[in-house]
Amino acid sequence: MRRVDWRAVAAGLAAPVLALVIAILVTSLVLVVASDPVGKVWETLLLVDATDAQRSRAVVNMLNSATTYYFAALAVAVGFRMNLFNIGVEGQYRLAAFCAAYIGAAVSLPAPLHVALIVVVAMAVGAMWAGVAALLKATRGVSEVISTIMLNSIATALVAFLLRKAAGDQGSSLNLSTDQLPASGRVPGIELGFLDTPIRVYGLVVLAAVAGLLYWLLLERTRFGFDLRATGMSESAAVASGVNVKKMVVAAMLISGAVAGLVGIPALVGEDPYAYTLTFQSGLGFTGIAIALLGRNSPIGIAIGALLWAYLDVAANRLQIQAGVSNEIVTIMQGTIVLSVVVAYELVRRYRVVSEQRRVAAAEPLAAGGGPVGGGGPSGGTGTAQGVPA
Image 1 (cartoon, helix red, strand yellow):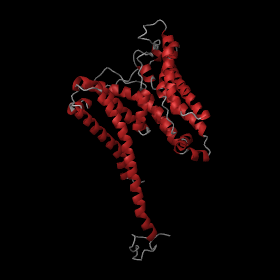
Image 2 (image 1 turned 90 degrees about the vertical axis):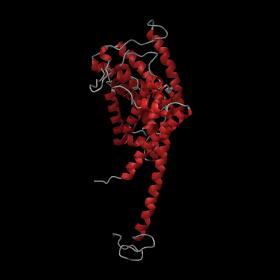
Image 3 (image 1 turned 45 degrees about the vertical axis):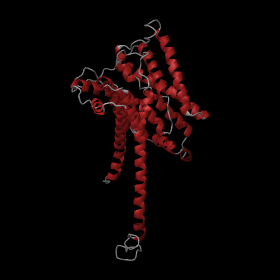
Image 4 (image 1 turned 60 degrees about the vertical axis):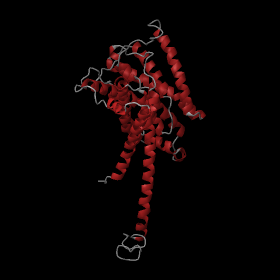
């Protein structure tokens, strides 16, 4: 069995721990400067004085938010592994959620098929919208950053226009909505019996776990994933090894868009009003970028990052009431955590490079002379290669 490199393990744990410590220190410093109660803020964020019912509600809300965050971060991470910046997850998931809601409400199918149709429609629309940027990148060399940002604006305006048409005479201009999904198009929540709350976890949390597993298998255990990662690390080397870079760009963006299409579906099929409305949650695509960076594009790292982000969001709702502090302090903390992770991982990477260089430098004299520089070999010689196996 291969020996565990405890130094590598310690270095891997050092980065997130260092990032969290930096974030706590910076946030505490901001609170001190603002003359806010530091201790009370941390007690509120950590739910120290919360009741069992409040903690249970916070856990369920955290899991539900983390589910949507996870899809958004996975979508971004697929592009990151290819060195592509899919900034368009925001527009992709909103357009996908609207189309899935509209089509899902217009058809009647048995429950499993109905839910499957909604999921497939969302993935197809998300991939289609991302495919526009992919084609512009592959055929015209247009930066995906610019094209996806512009497509976000177009998608937002398009959804607003289509929502007004779909709503027709229903409701007022302040409460536009698609028709409700029928019962066959809804996914019942998962009741966690050990928690003291009637709120349920999104049923599609299972789909999020499956998506994370498929992401890992695709990128780490397939030839396609190897080509994708190789292209992201060095496009010229990938071309030299026979990889069709343009094809990989299109494929990566389509996969990213398909995953992005799933971002709004857990709430759509698992939460009242089971429709796309003007109040449908926005901003998840940009949050996904931060969480992908926080999780270092790893499925497990992204899951931890999504849970941390969701936990801070949930805890922020109590700050203003119980600590008398603006909940924007959580936004400051979230941003500080992301920046701290980037800095901490770079510091740890540099330390590991220097440590490896020193280790190699220390081993070279031994390999060359059979012992330390200036000393004798294993058999008491004068530094020749005595004792080195043939």
